[in-house]
Image 1 (cartoon, rainbow, N blue to C red):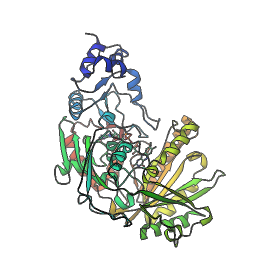
Image 2 (spheres, helix red, strand yellow):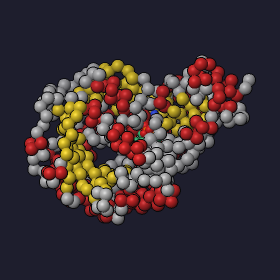
Image 3 (cartoon, rainbow, N blue to C red):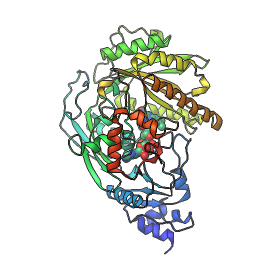
Length: 502
Ligand SMILES: Cc1cc2nc3c(=O)[nH]c(=O)nc-3n(C[C@H](O)[C@H](O)[C@H](O)COP(=O)(O)OP(=O)(O)OC[C@H]3O[C@@H](n4cnc5c(N)ncnc54)[C@H](O)[C@@H]3O)c2cc1C
């Protein structure tokens, strides 16, 4: 039997589907030799060089690490069989959502990449509705387990699709990422932050139950009350203890509309003062902010605040009362909740039109303690030039209340208020030397963040070593290490972070 014929059968694909699919018979042919393949699955398996090359890089375009095969499962059983097969052969395994990591975190050199994009079934919404009356404020932080409607989705579902399914019932996940083209599994594995995080925590805090395939290929259900050690090790656990196959997500009622203000300040101190005021008085349902290049070597300081409503738009004078922004520069945007959630698409289109979307993306994401945030940001931004972040790059900088964040492996500075401090570098060109310098700069800034009592948000681009991770996880390290020994004793899952070494 020729290798291509064997792939066809083992992939369980019909001849027609196989011919139309990159996971069909031609794929293995490209490799020349007949590789050993996993047992038959409903989805597909490919050793095609182009497919493996594509799975050997990510959105960051900085790290390359090519797998020997890509599995595209259709069911949890497919994932279980593939993981078991790979682990028996001591092959590294990485789940891949949409590959939006920036530093090789979803790669598995010489191993098996599990492309999760077809694990995207969306179940019915189970109602247990917490009513928020029209005109009432959206709920403050509550114990997520006590709420609410819920939806079960495949881990490869994008937040675009989760939102659309929830909106059909007038519901929404409490926290959406700024960019909806990320998968549920991909963000739950790292935390998942968004504009509402100050109120509702991270996405990992708003998961009610997970199904997880561990390294022996079995699928386990876990929640706060069942297999809680696995639940706690998988949420923001960087894929170290299992592959999430399905997630039950908390939902709350969606507002009809969003009124958003972008407010500008003469300097960082004025921005921070108003951000802290808005955080304390909870006037906004979403609170973020950024320091942006002004195009002539300086910076613009912006607060981004949004209020949700159904009928009767919140007035600007009342909503912005007491804030000290340059009011003549303020911009107001009033759109449907769905359009607001999709707003990143315009920025994506701009970057694509300039060719910057596909350039290397050496991003650095961190959290700072409030007591050190302003000074740290001032010093660090003072050492940055426009070229260090690119014409469309930015430093996102905004406060969060720490008490909204609960999942044990989400690391935050040890203060009531913390500031996200993210250097979103979007270089204007694909210059390897410049990228190398940016990575070194990321590492140097991260070292200073740590010294200032800050922590990494693990979507950052620069090498991390096991001792870095041990320090990162701090008091939670033992919990993660013990779970790793239990659920992936041979250290084969998600090698891209280098949490436990090679
Ligand atoms: C344009 C853009 C905007 C972004 N905006 C935000 C944002 O607003 N908030 C935010 O928090 N992050 C944001 N990110 C970062 C993003 O969350 C991470 O990049 C993460 O990679 C999620 O993307 P993904 O679903 O494509 O996952 P991948 O990049 O494919 O995977 C991310 C990591 O999770 C692991 N993984 C993937 N699926 C699973 C699974 N089912 N089970 C276990 N582990 C899994 C992978 O192995 C990898 O280690 C953004 C990234 C980009 C490129």
